[in-house]
Amino acid sequence: MWHKPAAIVAILAATIFWTSGNANAASRSKSNQIKYEYVPPKDPAHQPILDQMKQGRALEHLQELLSPIRLPYPLTLKVAGCDGVPNAWYNDEVITVCYEMLAEILKSAPKQDLPIGVSRADTVLGSSLAVFLHETAHAVFNMLQIPVLGREEDAADQFAAYVMLRLGKDEARRMILGSAYHHAIQMPGPQVTVPIRALSAEHSTPAQRTFNILCVAYGADKKLFADIVEKEFLPKDRAEVCAREYDDLNFAMTKLIGPHIDKRLAGRFHEVWARTVSTRRAFLARQ
Ligand SMILES: [Zn+2]
Image (cartoon, rainbow, N blue to C red):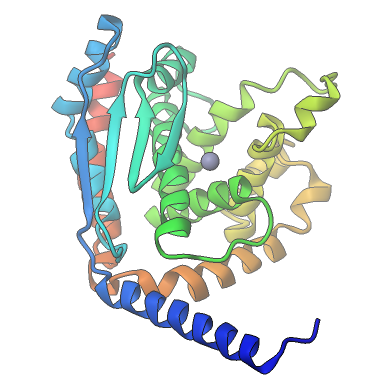
């Protein structure tokens, strides 16, 4: 469409306005912007979850882990009761994770450690971490105006998997497989019959989310995750393209998110995780 000169000037002015607005937002950005809030549960059955989280300083640890992200405004991590709905979301600079969702993760944890070197505690820690990181991705995309190509829900899962892979080999493996477990147990079996409308959902299906997480992990480190292909948790056909999928993700994260990370603080990421996870893991192992 042809625009008249006045219209072009208006478009240019608008462009400059938004560009300078973004620059101002970016210049206001700083690290250590994570806040947290433990909202008392509405359902008394969730009180032990709050007690455990407070005792294990779960939100304080997440605050420290996410502190390297430079944000223009504070981002609050909140746990709250959601009237029976197991959900989590990001809205208006607040991430809300429902006690119901954490209760579901705890309930679906295996009775015993898994034979692939993932403990019961890892399934709880990995799944909970994945939920918070997934919502952090929505917050980061929104607050930093990161362009997202493709489905944002898939991008948020990829963001979460990418961050977990930065934890160091052993911890990355435990958290990736621990988080994949939570989706994998929702797979009904090798053959699926679903109503067609289930395929129109905003989120990918549990099976797709499992394969996507495993593919990012295998693409990042074929040796560390070799057994997931050998044991056919990730089909060979998909595994063949995972290095390329990971490269695309790595490129996007480096180019789009990297400039918003405080590299000095991020250098401590590994150590912060190792220090904070040991208390949570020991605590969960006693249950
Ligand atoms: Zn989401």
